[in-house]
Image (cartoon, rainbow, N blue to C red; front, side, top):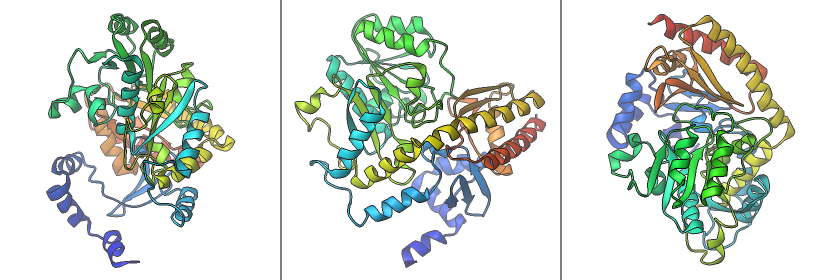
Length: 424
């Protein structure tokens, strides 16, 4: 081990916390400590994290789905190690082997109307690409999103977001360009679109930071119909809900609701948790600018050739028949166990679920999920509260869990919920 790597691997936790508070992000350091979750990740393997103190955690946060296939997935690591003998970041101006292969594969996995995959360095950038494509295609500026949305912290993306994220940087956007409507309110959506000047509607298929409220029956297809009626594009933010997380054999969650979007945005899990990458998959209309001026969007690190290798391997693993079947098996096993736990604890009031996306409701307290998060941390489970609805715990199991993993998760989850319930 090199001296540099040795100094990082064997760092002192107190020193890391001190330097993080001094040079990185003092508020985050203080906030996690105050919540009783002073996590500094040391060793990580599969679906387990180890705090630098040695405290073992089952990861049910997955950094928003980044670790769908586990931490340091051995197959993806092997591909990347071999790729380092042949590739580097590449040059974004020129055609490239990895980019061509990944773009083709992404289009092949998407609904039949898709034509191009525009690669990015991450999800926020991919969202901005998607929104720019919609404005190009429609020659309109107005963008409709849902109240309490979150689509990343970049430029246009921040304009679509809840004020919790946009106001601090005066990025809420002009009301004549960014319109927000309640989720699951089809009348409000039509009112926003009826003026005929909207470029697109952007929605997470199941809004993650809002606590995974599920779309009402027929809501997403109705939004798509309205988009077609009023000439707007439908942008599906699949950064957290895509890549098989909604189950049922659907790589993209939006298609499990019977919707064919005009643009799909993906990132996080596409990286395999090892190399940053994202993409906007677009139809001919949205991607028409690629035939006019290919320099319309430039991203030095977008579609890094090494990232393309990681993404291609990630897609291969995710689309294996065993993985597809396992997702549904995990979803059923965990749901059955969670239903039993919920029946025992009135504090645990509801379960929102689509595939391996779970939002656990603790509505008897305005910040119930924060208390559960702390107790789960103590019991060896890492799951995070929903920032825009802290009554709801984001509970996101990985795609490759075993039955034994699920049983341990349920055992530790019940212990954490029992401890939280006893504190009120």
